[in-house]
Image 1 (cartoon, rainbow, N blue to C red):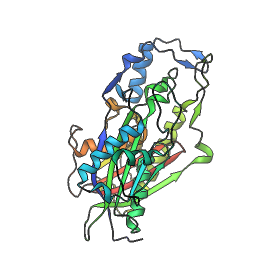
Image 2: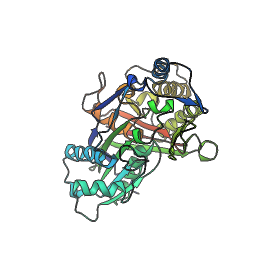
Image 3: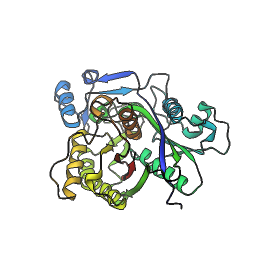
Length: 358
């Protein structure tokens, strides 16, 4: 492993679906809990949900799009932004959880892998460009970036394309309130080997899997409506327990990554954290600062897009990076020399973080 070689962000891209779904779109839904129809008016349910999560609206893919389609759009934009020849890419890592799903069905299609499908769509001919999928819950893209770092520092690759794409709108239970959390989207980043003496790049990373006690916090299950006619399984989560798990454990992993890089907390300029729940992310940051004996989280440290994009799983972090990089998140930007934290948590339960100098 060549520690003198840095893994550098060469280009970013994202795709935000055009279809906007607001809280009003759920006013006619029938929500069940423990097999019983909720008695509260949907307007109250939607309002309370928005207050808890910070989500006002979310985006859904068009009827003629599947995950590999939107992933390819983000990937093409990242390659264009990088200025690299697409045939020079050594690996395509496509991070997702549910493959391609057609509208009106949650049947999953992962044959061939989405990485291979995207390589076909991009028409990359080079057989030495290896394409594969990474299933790692919401932290998938961050883990893909960590794998890219291993490939590049080992000398096995000079350029790696890491894509995060998901169409969660097709795997959610319409009778479960949690369906309002999830969204569709795609983000992609091209990583390259840094030039000699280049200071930018990934400085450190840390990953954990808490499967024995917490692996069941996000699973697949039957429809919340007891008399539902279909046999489909939908994504299910234990929201309160997941919140407590994240707030207790994510700050520890971020601190380990910062410490591993030999940095102090005040060296961090910006935090790109998985957009799952704005209150949860705020609590994670507050707990992180307490680990360093600090009480106040600085303003303008953590850009957020969840209010208008919802939770698109593996796509949230690379999409957030692309938007901030291009000045599309008000009040946020990236300057040369800034040090950023990239972190996520999700099904598995997996947690990861990496530290990056821009």
